[in-house]
Image 1 (cartoon, rainbow, N blue to C red):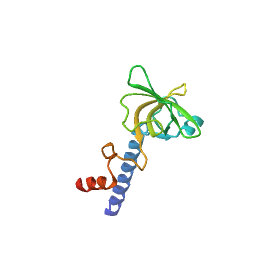
Image 2 (cartoon, helix red, strand yellow):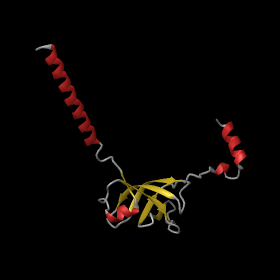
Image 3 (cartoon, helix red, strand yellow):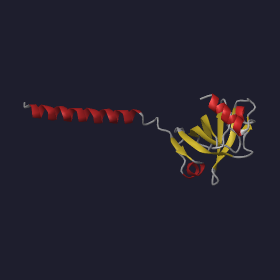
Image 4 (cartoon, one colour):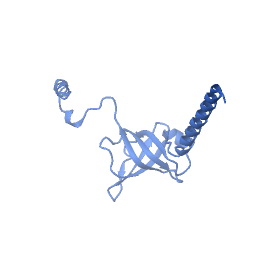
Length: 148
């Protein structure tokens, strides 16, 4: 076989192996994808029960309730158009409060309840750490310069 043909066979073989590896990786990760929904999307087109998804929105004012066990919370995530009840069992992030943004990772249940496995609290662009809340702007800038 000529060298030109050997290179062509090698190139085609490498391409086949590369495509096969990409398809194998995509097949292995197909269940690891977590889709993001807002409440109006999840109400209009709910994912199948048990499928891992992310629900993002605002925690409705007055909806946060702690269960008797002290570690389970119930609240409502809304986006101004729809509301989704959520339950979570575990340690709540310190930034998680009513009226704040949240991303809940979990799954929808058959009755329309979203069961979260993890909560990610979001803050606005004006976030200030607790340690710096009582400082003036000049004091805060001084602390930031000293910690660089």
